[in-house]
Length: 129
Image 1: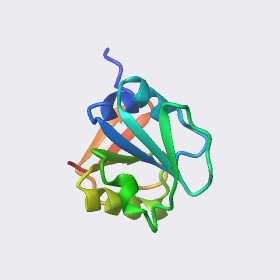
Image 2 (image 1 turned 180 degrees about the vertical axis):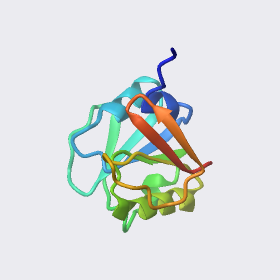
Image 3 (image 1 turned 60 degrees about the horizontal axis):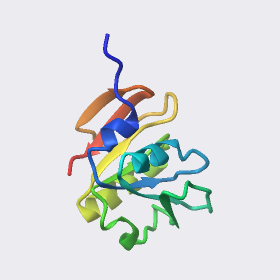
Image 4 (image 1 turned 90 degrees about the vertical axis):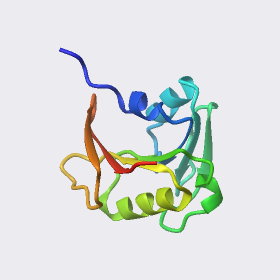
């Protein structure tokens, strides 16, 4: 049986991505950078990221649009329901695709066009580019 792809494998179809709310888990951002993607990570708190990932302190509920403008895709991992709309809105404002994963049994509260099975669970496509 074929194993489902990783989140990084799916997102690597995009050349420039922004991860919203990276926190202390830079694994996907690092994997994307290793695959040749230009990766920017954001969080409301200062975070340590690999040298291959650009970090910008930003609040997605009051975003600095310039951080996202060059992105082909915006994604958030373990995205809580209260931030999902803001992530989708910033992606839409810059014409980028938008992907979300949730934490455990938390719901997706924004419309999604697709639910993809990935190695870590489900990846929701909230906006196609």
